[in-house]
Length: 211
Image (cartoon, rainbow, N blue to C red; front, side, top):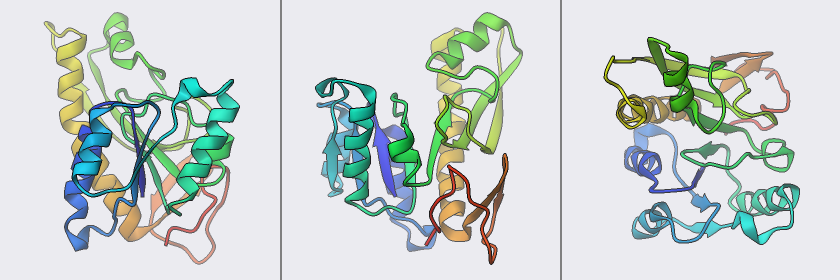
């Protein structure tokens, strides 16, 4: 898998640690970022993992950046792309070429977008959580693979709630990516099922046989 990050790379580090066990079924072939100087890229380099950076601001528009990102990802021939704290929208050039999953700090379809934790608090929900889903060309709109609920406490602010969400999302991400690698998957409409079938259902988010 290729893991994409925008910051410290804590979820990426958890995937690297899990992949040290051959039984996990997946390995990280590269780590990519959308900006220079991230701690996540440093951590990947320290672990001996190939890295690349495609700075968003170096391109005239989003489509050019997506095309460049797709090219860099394809160099590593991944079976899966994992958006782990990656803060850019991946367009058709990427999601049309590689199955890709994303971790989101809310129970989708509620509270999509970059401010999910803030929006959940503002709405006054008593339960929020985290979702791992396949990427499509929308914003946090792809087929859902798994979700974990996190209660909202009376004294929560955005930082405290987000920290509790991060604690469960890391475990869910590692477990789910491992299952996808070991068991394969099928997407039927909006329904994701683990396990390979003789004839896989294909759509924009399921375009490549998981090896």
